[in-house]
Image 1 (tube, rainbow, N blue to C red):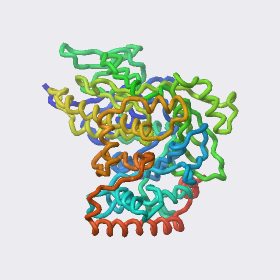
Image 2: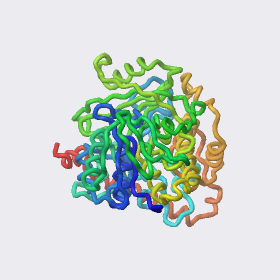
Image 3: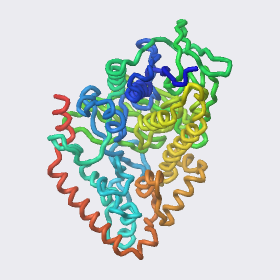
Length: 524
């Protein structure tokens, strides 16, 4: 029997599907044939419906996906009408009131917004988040300075170079192409998916088949031998990826793997989205906006000439038609004429992401509110894990337990990161916020908050939540008690704070507006 898997079938021509196909074809370089089963033109569904036509890409997208494929950043940015994403900006998460884009005032008189910059969880000077060779991320030294009365600056402006540049809508690159700051991207979802398809089918000989999945042909041991379409087309494969979207047509539909819902943890169960024309005189914000609203939260992801806008809410507390009308009004659009799209949002995961010789990717594996995350980050992570655990044809399910444990761990970390926002935000001004604050908090999240409030340093994956936690928590910041004994560490941190302040001034003077850089890039 042949010991090597020779072909992979990707079910679903979604963004996740074509991302997976291009990635795997580039990794295996002809050793494995990849085929994508995509729905006929006009019938393909979006991955989740959460984006409003705009997708966020993580900072690792260039180094982990495009660089191995030999694709220059400027080439794919032009093809996908891309813009920069240097941070997530949180607005009105600490003050009650109606839904509005403009920040309200906090009791101390400063506007209610803060930034969580891309690349802001490490401890190196390259990102401005820590000190060289330090055990403590820079936010802990900020907490020490605040408690000692040495600074009144908020955490983001003390610890990161980006915030004043984000206020000024600066580019993360100089006009000569040199990078100044870490960043991700916003892309047109349709253009991005089409570009991935062209790359996969052109450069890497990925094959396509059109049809709608009807079922599977399985052998006596339950392994899938082929997928079968409603038109009778049979596509054989050694391994299959479910990239059909949240419905998980292969694993949940054909194989019957159950989904585990998380409705008891997160209230938002629906979204409305639209595309709003951009004000040409307002510039292009190089960040994702996340704005708290009485019945959930809103997002904006800008592109050249337009912005993807959406609203996540609970249908128990708000009617979908009202949410759509209010979103259109917030964008200055006629609610009767605006193309408002409604989508269900079912937070949860499939019980096992790897079943027999099938693996779920993207929203086929799990769905969670995308607060402060890039949509394709989870797909890239799962693809790396899949390649690392790529099996032989005689033991196609051997890596499944390890892969499934990691998929479950990753989902729970993402879900807890979302719930952290609700648990930490002090808003109690509406039924939504009061109900969300009353939701049970998992032990891991309780430990995380207790550690922060006790002044104990977070580490590893928990650092991801540090900026949001420190910015939303209303109590006084507590520094690790051991810092009282580390004079040299505090002195080094003081130098880092001074370096960040100098960098903020220099970059503000030398970096061009994002709109100018993107106009040159796109020729607009």
